Length: 533
Image 1 (cartoon, rainbow, N blue to C red):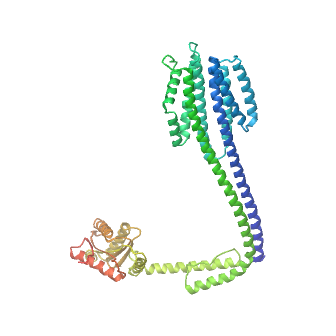
Image 2 (cartoon, rainbow, N blue to C red):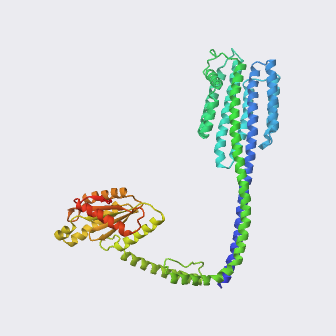
Image 3 (cartoon, one colour):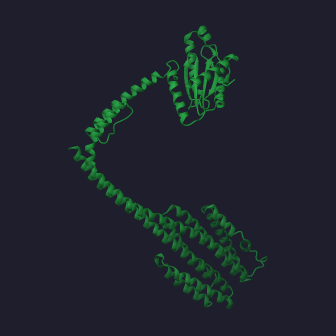
């Protein structure tokens, strides 16, 4: 099979596979968009259920008060609240399992019994609570259907807030009934109030754990008002059975508790509005992403088709390009360059084999260059290689002026070491000195053996003061080191920095050598920085 035939088959398979992949990705993106659209609808339903729960909670509180003392004025307030509940119930757009119909039927039966004077506490109170609980269960069911982690946590906190408000609403109803039935046994209501107070506190705690710090602070602000503190005081007194100190009527209690619950409802509405806004933003992002992805898919698909059409033409040219690359490598002697290997065919085999030869040649040249620039005794850069580094830094300094310093040091009385202990010991000292030098300087510094017992360190981007500090550090390290067969030695240091407008290496080397001479003249074992004096 020829190369042209193989490339043609591969192109056909690639285009087919790409089309299949892009269609699958588009389906996935559309599914995500549809899923997020359902999330926004679920949030809208949660908002409607929340509004209905709030009105039904208020109706429950008024109904329990009416059961305790069915007064005419109280009856009118209850009828108005029932109408408000019906408006929210009629606005409920959809819910699973025919919840609206069941709720309307049970609510109608319960209201008829209460308004006819046949209601009984606590059975009717519990029936209201069961209806509200069914709505809260529906809210929780909607939250569980949300499949976006970022919203799921916030919705969980929102549900805790709804339950906290529900238990506060039950306390409102229970205490209202207690206050309107003075002298009647209250033991069961006291126990119920204490239980509900505990549940309210627990769901308040859960909300503060799951919600962000800002929303927890907002809840504290709502529940920290004087009206809320007075409501909590009544709740605690009721839970403890201490009715005697209470100087509050049932109407006052109901209004104050309702004010606090309404504030919680406002916080609940703001929380839900934030979640709806986040959901709509996600939906807008997905809508834009789906549009861009569709356009991108069409663009990529068209590009792939054009690519296939030009593939054969490219294969014909590949041999010419291969030969051209070889010619450039030979003319420029750039053995670090490699031929492009585009396929595992004959030309790919030729290119790979040629690249292996280039690798061998490059390695041999690098080894030769390394040997030519390395001091054989110490393994440091030799004079030749050091000058190359210095030239590079000077060239870079011309482009980007920045500090450049140089350190030279000489082992004091090294001739005495050779004369006393022999040249082999002297070589050991030089090798030890090189290791100590490498361990002390920075990774960006360049060390070298300048000749004999002299060493140089090139310090890019370093001021003369910093270089003097490093020289002093190295001097102390040498003076405190025990060298093989010799013991303690010292060294004298010269330090100089490149002056403004100075570009010749000879000037810098001359001045650093003068600084070393001054160190020798001043008694050795010291670091001297060059000065004009």
